[in-house]
Amino acid sequence: MQAVFLRLLRRGSDVEAMENEESYLRRAAVNAALDVIRSRQSERAVELTEISAGAAPESSRELRQALARALAQLKPRPAEIFTLRFLEGFSNPEIARMLKISQVLVAVLVHRTRQQLRKQLGAYLGDRP
Image 1: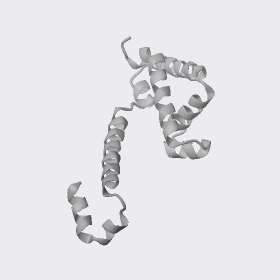
Image 2: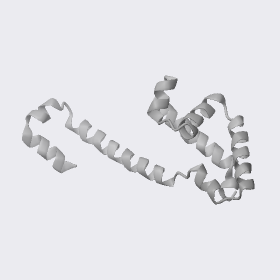
Image 3: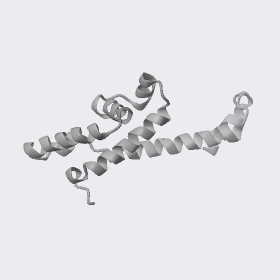
Image 4: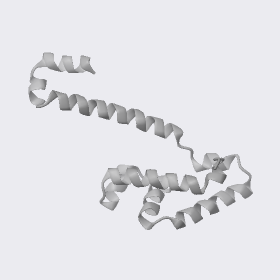
């Protein structure tokens, strides 16, 4: 990171455009950390098709029914966002634009909803109480 900054310093004109080098470096470090966190989160995600692929047709149907019941217990906004994200395949920025809310709120609601559903569907996902 410092090497990149030093190259910018040598150019001169690029650094003059940058008003606060410390803020720039801090933001770059935060963005790099967020990229690492996002990549780790996507590796941990398990698709529902992966869970039900190895299961018997009977238990696959039970899982879908349990998911439907769990989604029905959610408040409307979290259920809508979860459905758009994981069942319809929209990204968080797309959902934020559609619903005219912030991306941060979308991410928070997705995270909380996933935690709630994981608790409710723990028996189907092989989680221990």
